[in-house]
Length: 478
Ligand code: ZN
Image 1: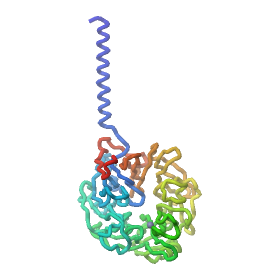
Image 2 (image 1 turned 180 degrees about the vertical axis):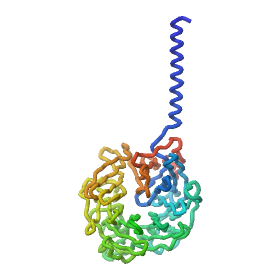
Image 3 (image 1 turned 90 degrees about the horizontal axis):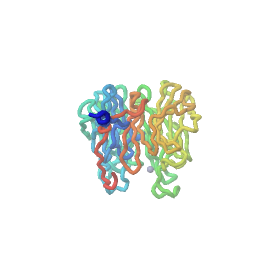
Image 4 (image 1 turned 30 degrees about the vertical axis):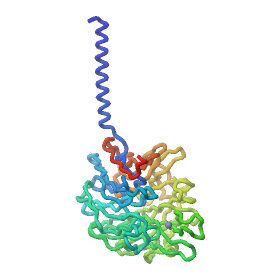
């Protein structure tokens, strides 16, 4: 072999080895390619603040629920010790999301709320938007669509198999679950479409049976204008045996009315707060005065008002209490908030100091949907999705260390250019690595990538495990 040939041979060999090893690296890379979402089959407004909780942390595992293909409920879980994902599994079949001729393509009202009972069975309520006339007379309101259903896991802490039970009112929508320390389960919801009472049903046997619906917010015809009183409460655990409620008022105008040429619009006003002592069954205002139930608009204005917001519109109250029982309440406020992302609407924060409601000094709280966590008398955090001025969607935490007097954006969990997010309420009893469930809106698609976000950002998953069937009734999309 000549020297020249020898050098060429060696060079070829080196090249061959280099290629081989880089190819090997590449294939390894593909096998373990991680992405920061856990599923790609979220559908429509896959999670929201109102239907909640949509996630619970329990014995080392975070369980999450969201609206998937055909508006059916899906449940996934993440084990924080083994770092193993399971699911999502379809946990029930919604009556909505199946009709290709329906004018409103995606109803979105039947998103699942999730709860784990004392025996470890996992429950979801889903699929309702007031029921239909075929379902018969609604004694507490009017009809619209869907059927509220209750499904339970067949085995404790196992999300792979589910059974749908016929033990809650099918007229429900906006399901909200609360579990007390003694294991009692409360399912709160609106008993029909806009012109309906808000009620709860209580179970003392781990959701096997529920008591009859009990009204706590009353819908009522107004006499001086062509409209009805309607409500949007958000219900959560307070301290001890308390359940706390933040709510705003929907003036449900007739389609044709003399007061507003626009007819019926999603017009909401005011911010209210009240407490349900589940031990005594008594409802009270922030001053501990007893309230006559179901609450009417007149009594709400007189006894439970946090702030009268008559001209601006409101959206989605949220609340938490500090260890002394002093509540904090947050709501979105702005002109014609009905067109959701337009207008200079902002979150406004209020806190009760024992004598009066005080408003946060911040006028620069973001505009977006969020949830609040009060950890001490001085520490308050608001988790919120919003869009920055540069078309960047982000999920961030705004912290206060002065009891809610001032807030500052302290932590960004997730940021994406040209995409928007929908977020859940805070996960119940959250592990710090998994606080919120997020769906990422993508241009031109109804499907959403689903994220589970915590203090270390999104929890990752192998890419090939995140791809799921995306069945849709609309053949032109996706
Ligand atoms: Zn209405």
